[in-house]
Length: 359
Length: 259
Image (cartoon, rainbow over all chains, first blue to last red; front, side):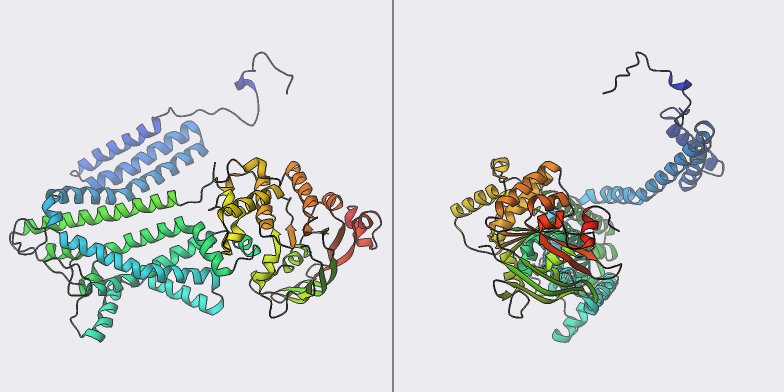
């Protein structure tokens, strides 16, 4: 406890020291200046006939310059640089968000027109013109994606466990390299692989739901391997050693200690991998095809899926075309909603399964 | 219960690098043996070789003999998993399993080895082990809370409870107090003194007062030079090491004239 309690603090400004008070811009001055720059940009582009893209470019440059120069003059060089970088980073963020916002808006705007009960409980069987729906395609997508998950998760997870817990030397490096290569293969190649594989057994022209599942597995397995590998690597080695020191065999340590500790990350990785393949179009186009009626058996005949449904509604709309194009938009909307739901599920998994801290 | 450990001509390697050379030591049952020495001289490596935890590290291997009650731990027909069931270990940093409650942490050794046990037996074992680790009164009302919510000293005592719950014959402790405050350290030292009636305890420590306080015998490890393997320089009763050591190097280290 200090005994030197001065009754009145000395005036700050008179004390010479390393910490000096600086002049600062008023609170909303920087934002205001930036907006003024945008308005100026709009005026400038209006001189040569109004153009939205030019407005944004002029406005961003002028706004950034205005903020930077003012701040530099008033607040000094360091603060000025700070404001400059803040402006650049914020502008880049907004530009990156523009396509996303535009996409969501367009899909909602066009997709909501046919977002009705008929869309969810009727197929395209016998539909010419008005009406019709994607019941068959929604369930086709769900079934094929489920089948893909059932094939990919065990293979991917076990491969990741091998890489992290058992693999050494050349084999491990070879697998890691091949997985990296597989992450990069174009999706149509995966589709042609499944097509060629099944053509060997059933002859050319075969179309089955399970073919699509296999094609999608080729795309999904590497994603699961990579994400699971990263998550398993994060499990502290001390926990494995603690378990070994209790006389627990290695496989049991993996099942009872490593995987439960990593379960949140594993679940998130799988969910995001599902979201990654659920919208694939090209491989399903060549392996599953399209059908107007409902086929829920992936081992027999063609199936409808949402992405392929949207593709055909758009490219072969029939007459009048607007009705089919509206159905395509709604199919796209449903697909985006599925992906968003999966992302929400991934977040919930990582929240609820994370190890509890108890505090 | 407690068993005698005889080590003869033990060389320990990481790949091609020889980390520890030519250790001969006899560890008495029902006593505390302390290992001291500068960092990187191979104390922890030696300790880990006593329950075959050393070979968990890729490329690590051991030459020589570790004999417990007439049985060579490194003979070909011995399963390292069985060795570790008999020789428990407490690590430098407390490492309770984060997914398990306090209760589950204590019986982790039993449950993970899938030994069948009645609920009442498990309750008794948990209480006995936690009492043995001087933690029962602090946690008895929150056994189902996660173990990671305890303080550092409590977590370390939880790890000791977990280690003694499987009823090992030897307890190895690798700097168990280095991450703890003096009060928790004292609690764990008291605990060691109680536990030595039932277990053979080997402890690695950087704290020479701690070695002097708790141990009956002390071994001093040292490096001959940079890149050279560590060696056991001197192994004697603790009073002798701290009052009148045989080797000049030991005296220099203990009095702080090291290096």
